[in-house]
Amino acid sequence: MSRPRLATVLIFLVAFLISAIILIQQTEAATFSISYDITFTFQNNRSAKVTQKVSLKNLAARRYPGEYYLNISSTQVSNLSGKDSLGAIKVTSKKAKDSTIITAKLNDKIIGKNKETVFTVNYTIENLSNKNGRMWDILVPGVDISEKLRSFKLTLKIPKSYGDIYSIYPAPLKIKSSKDFKFLAFDKKKDPDETIVGSFGDYQAVNFYFKFKLNNPNFFSKKERILVPRDTSFQEVYFSEINPRPKLIDTDQDGNYFAEYELGPGEEKEIAVKGAAKIDKKMSEKLSSLEKEFELGDSKFWEVGSSQISKVSNSTSDISSVYKFVTQTLIFDEVGSDKNINKRQGAQASVVNPDKALTSEFVDLFITLARAKKIPTRQVVGFAFGDGTSLTPILINGEGGNKNLHTWVEYFDEKEKIWKQADPTWGATRGVNYLHQFDANHLTLFIRNSSSEKPKVPKIFALEGSSAFKIEPSVADFNFPVNPSLEIDLKEAVSGFPSTGKIIIKNDSGKALRGAKVMITTQYLNILGEDSRDLGTIMPFSQYTVNLKVRGGSLFKTHKGKIVVDLVGLDQGVEKSFSSSKEVLVEPFFSFNAPQVVLLVILAAVLANFTPAFYRRLKKPS
Image 1 (tube, rainbow, N blue to C red):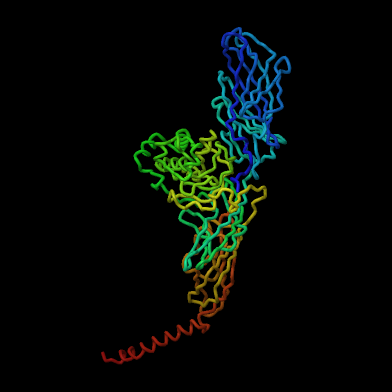
Image 2 (image 1 turned 135 degrees about the vertical axis):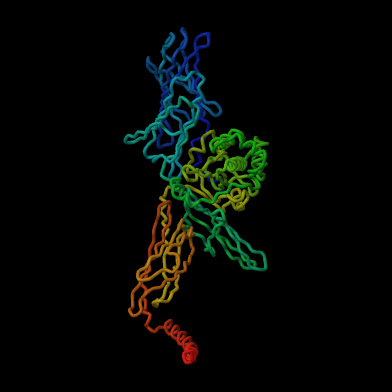
């Protein structure tokens, strides 16, 4: 199977730098200041129409610009035109290996200090945006400016059909709307070369299919577990099929999901796992409270306490400086990726050999430095939907290394009390900020928190061209509600005696109910013990039992008691509740049912044993 992608082309993912070179028709070198007012109007066909207004101001007398050059790192540039104060100007293009050079020959030759030459160049760039499933992704790289910059206004016109802003960095200064477009305004004077990267849409939906083959060559039975996609603070998973059904779906100490099977002697099984996932960072506001297992200690590749790491850690102050150090220090070793894909250096060695880093080194160093600053951070392994170029490398190196999976990190923001994501590898290779914004193109398979080595990477994902797994985007709505059933199993109660029963919770759906809590209320009955229980996660295709004990009633009258059970939990970050009730007939104490008869027999035996001795004591003379 080919490397999983959400699109064959992801907005070219190139460092699209527009460099302006002014050709001066004088023998002396000219000096100019420059102002930009650039508008990118994005289209539904993935192109963007660019209107670039330029103002060149002479800082010295007897000089003027004759031609203006744009070097665009894309070969798909078309629809060239331009004008200045004297009318249309001649605009031509010439394709280089990976770029296009646009030349604008100016008509208006304005001479004199502080005089301005104002002109506009128009062009279209193909594939500057791309639709991945339900999401649109855009990338607007910065401008490399050699002249003195007076001002730089940038406007992005985003079609409303793209959807709402999912993530964007840097944040726009203003947002306005018209009937068909959103206008995002930026002031780029301070950071003209910074790339703007954004995603638009409500959430991402991904379909997945895995096929596992289990084999037990032994002469005795054994248990086997297969790792399946899990719920996180940013995603929820629905299993439409796990065939054959597992004995149970359980979690490890880091919350990863495992389907468990019992294999007899010499037995083979082929397990098909199908489902869909919803990726939506907005869920993290509610779901982060369920992911509080923090680890700050050492592990094999996370040498938090080493002297080398301590020295580096002293140069960082917060998560931003950790990200900056990692992305600016390590260099992704594209040439050595095939050779070293089964090797993993760890954090300490990556500092010594920064030019030999692969994805695991970026992640290991980020986690180690963050933990050294007491910031909870953990490794995520899953699928990242880039284009597979050197700018978006998709691989994980080390034991089980392969080019089908990717790795990134999650860190806990103590101020906002939520988990956040970062991809230091792509931050370094793409030159964009993958700390303060994150797209919806990362699907989590499992998380490493307590160990840098476990869980192991399943072998099926290391097979190139394998039909054992498939990941693809979906435009369909993620509408798979969890619907557990509640059964109250309690027979008739007798006044004065504890009655035991149980609450049976069945989740036959392929979706988990997270942060589940069961609450019990009664009428004409008293609960013996706690009236609420925290259940954690109600796993898919599972059953849970909660023991119940009540007591109540009167001496002579029969009552109808009632037990009400409410189950609450989070579904896609929204609280859902489920309820069930049962009437319980409470017999009076003097109803002479089995418990009373037994009690009376016991009382009679005690009295029979006690009465003679008491009588003799009364007759004894004083």
